[in-house]
Length: 398
Image: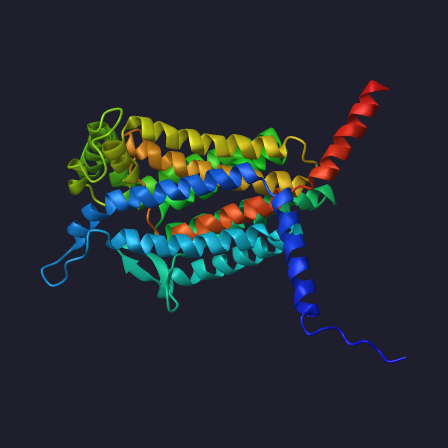
């Protein structure tokens, strides 16, 4: 009998069906509520950067080059599109793929941090960027790998309790803190230290080692105060007043200037005097133009994401998943609330962006990639979960 050759379009049709099937599985397994909340924050960010862009564009314009009012807004949209692509791609990975990507990213960014003090570019007295065709801030992309890298190491103890995972993690954190302070970047050091503390506590560390960690943290703060002029000045300005304090005071006054409902889009005036209105102090711009109610709504969205991640982990049995997802949540929430507290004049100025809202290149893409990895790690088959719940209910009834 003569063989029947497949039609020319059969292969592409089969591929399209497989692709649609994979997307359907992805849509069933990811945490859709978290995805929607992240997209809401990014939409708020686009509007907020459009509101803050004129202040920064006019401030940075020169006699030779006048920047358009929406200069930073147009750039931000490009970074958001790239960030969305990174987030959706990362969220399609399986848990093993996300773990491998996080470990590779963590190792690569550690290596990049070693190079920064020697070949990095200096901006405003800090050397934090590498120019590799594009400007790259390794500490931002380390956020994508750091929780996964720590969670992976800490999960080794489940296989062999004799492995000194806590000592390895303390050593890793010590090296990271040193590399960051060589830039110097005290804000990122604090953020990574907080994430490290959350993961160490969740891993079941001995109470004596917790005391040792706090002792090391206090010793590090004292050492920073006496050796890092910028950090000491910011603390002194926050406690006793000064130039940096005046900036934070201006941010608070800008935030409160709009009252509960705001002055209206592009109607703010105090924002024009704010430094970094499109990045560090964008929360104050939102307060002036859209009101304190809008600021409260943003805080609620951040809190809802954190609560949603916690609820997602309640029934989780895999130690790596619990630690990695908790690390991403702690890092995300910590950065958001440090920025908000600075704008409220309740924390020393840190130069830290508001996640998914502030303008940024590395920060926007890296934070989107972080959220994509979080969605990938917390993917869950709903049918298996229902079966587990049914079996547990039957067991309890018996």
